Length: 206
Image (cartoon, rainbow, N blue to C red; front, side, top):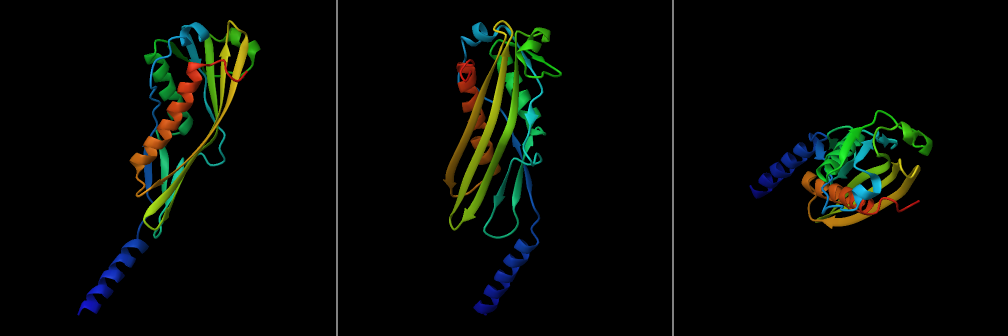
């Protein structure tokens, strides 16, 4: 009798796993500065233009995936979507809260000569080269690797200069269980660390 119950249980589990559908989870993207940047206004001026960010990744639909031991993989997508809009909007809100006036710029070619045509005192543009989190399950644990690569361009009108910073970050952690909330925590901490460092010393890298 016990054998038949075990057989039914195993068969049921196999059926559930085999019928599982690929899940897509939305990951809220939010830059949350850990502090203020008292010297930022003096360095870049009272207004900053936010030019369209560029997502140059080969696959721009997702920002990560989770491969379980059994069943099908789950995927992660930025909220809002697309990713460049999510990061752009989040940074715009953050600099506005810091006392700067954020102005949306329709386009910028990234050249110092064109800064005089920008209505803001400075202009920010980010190229997203890589932004990916991958979790791979193993018995009793899940290894998670996150890789982010940005090129951050800051044009300062009064300096007639464009400061470019190349930022590459990789982080690996081992978790007992991977959840969308943990992905949100990981990626937003990386974003916050990157831009906290950038706004603390925006001229670095030139």
